[in-house]
Length: 492
Image (cartoon, rainbow, N blue to C red; front, side, top):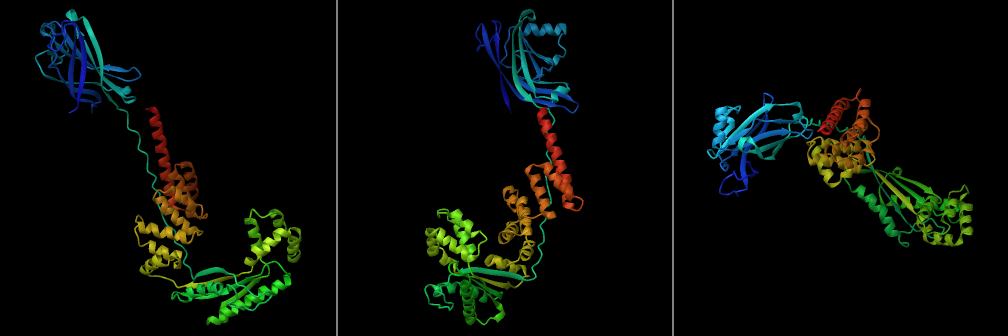
């Protein structure tokens, strides 16, 4: 039970009681079980219990309690009053019958808790602003002369209509089915820096650091050869020479050294001769340019870059750098050119297709790069879309195939479903311009609060896309409910 302590200061010698002084008194009236309600018959009802046991008045005095409802704009309505009268005043009212209802008049000192309940017609202003309910207390003396009047706020009621509920944006989240790879081709790449004797093309495995560099190539080949689920389809070795020396001689060196390395690799395996292919680049100007671009401390860097990018033939180009900027050329010759003499290798191989989802799950845990997008999709379809496993599969697919539009569309769908907008936008940037990608961009806009942007996208897609058509009607309802809610708030 909620109890309000209602304090009234009564002035005048006529108020009696052990706790009161001769000239003034404090009267504390407990108010409990207070309720202010709008009834089914459209009236405003106030009910409360007032503990009047402490009120002791001289026989000619009375206290009048009047509930008053009002708002901040000055609208007001008064409820019927409750009279607590001394003996003489009480009987005077009875004789003159001047109180509208006998149950509104009680004799002071003769009762404990007074149950008050009354209603007034409900007015329109009561549902436009909060309603303050106060208790106005008037002390009257002889001949009904006013002695003291006090207003006390006892509660504030709010009968304004509730704000409209904002509709929920609930788009459909559908994943795209990737196209199955007819042949699952993978590749390993690397560079080996193999030294050859000056101006020679024969390979010496134990010369300088050649053993370790050759091992790079062999380990990559063995990685595939020893995998029962893989089969090598081709090995490409491309040799590069550095720009110093004559271009014609560099052609001979790059071509001959590449062929020698390929023959050495072939001698260690039983590959069909068609498996190993060779290519060569007589002078690695691109590698030189990449280094010069990256070394911001190199003197005359921009001018050297201009020579590299010029239309000069290779030999004049190298000579111009050598004689124009000898200091920088010496540095490049000693520190950069050796790394330009390298052999790049690429091993292409085929991974068998997996169709059993249990096997796909096993491979995903151990060697996920062996799986195609379609195989990951098949596994994902076995999980509940709300499960962590489902989310893991599609996000792994996007990690393994970071530039694939389908993988990014599906990852965007998963993250949007979880409400992770910051992550979703990164996937959407790489999802291409398919109908599904545009649909999820619309979903992103809708979830971000850009309703007009979402509507524009869904209107374009709706004629041919059922999910977009449903999302269009949904987002229009969301927009209307938000606007109505804001309008209602501004009116409160």
